[in-house]
Image 1 (cartoon, rainbow, N blue to C red):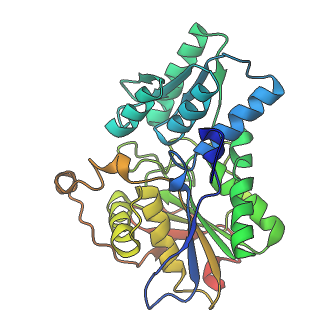
Image 2 (cartoon, rainbow, N blue to C red):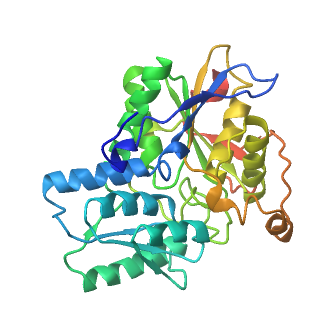
Amino acid sequence: MLYQNIIETIGNTPLVKLRLDNQSIGEVYAKLELQNPFGMKDRVAKNAILAAKESGELQDGQPIFESSSGTLACGIALVGTSLGHPVHIVTDPRLDSITLAKLHSLGCHVHVVDKMGAQGWQGGRLELLHRLLEQHPDGYWLRQYENPSNPESYTGLAQELIDDLGQVDILIVAVGTGGSISGTARELKKYNPNCKVIAVDATGSVIFGQPDRPDRLQGGIGNSLVARNVDHTLIDEVHWLNDQEAYAATHVLARQEKIFAGNSSGSVYAVARWVSRLVKPNTKIAAIFPDRGDRYANTIYNHDYLKTKGINVELTFDPKQVDRNDVVHSWSYASYRENTVLKI
């Protein structure tokens, strides 16, 4: 298929029916957002930047600023620099060398904080970002945590699911800024008000009321602050996986489904496979896989690293049901409303 520029290639990603196992009853379809040029958040970069330019909030040549641990950074660098904007990304030491190389190759200015703030690494990044904006008063801040263009970016993703499946009964999404789960769920519920929405988070993330543990290893999922774009009213159930479980699930995803992805995709896969065992036949489960595994070559897919961290890559698909106010340390799930997925 011919495109006139790289920005046009964002979206319309493949949807793949997963193999699962002989215990699965429902059908799980993986939306391979990792097949965007850099990942799922390319959609946000494209939609937010084009909307800001159309409204006049972002003028030609105006610098763009954002705080990101990597997934959105590449999308902003791709779209922003393609349209002639200097791009400044504020990040932290967890940024992997592969993503850093991508950002530099695209002509992006990368600013790395050297310590956490009051709200973990995200807090430290935002403090530095504010200082940079004081130095560049003409700078445009994309504000992924609260910009409505973030969830609106996923209307197209939901439409793609409807076009391919007709109806989605269960949606499973990893949560960070809240854009992908909120935007996709809101649109899907227009077609099926009974669509069940499952959020997947990391233990030690504060999004759903857990205490913050900034030393968690997982990237691309979880947060040390609750973004405004997280619409809790859309969510039926939450699952939390710890580092060991998320990394193991990512390896199982690669071995069983031949999908080389990051740990947010691995966590979503684990939950989707487990849920598929509990539902009625022909239930259609959409699982969103956000990013590829290349940026995790030195961590998740590095056996020496795993050994150093005491992580094995075997996963037991046996989560524990808890009250939503319980503090969790391993794969657990809690209902956000009475009519949960478990009662389907």
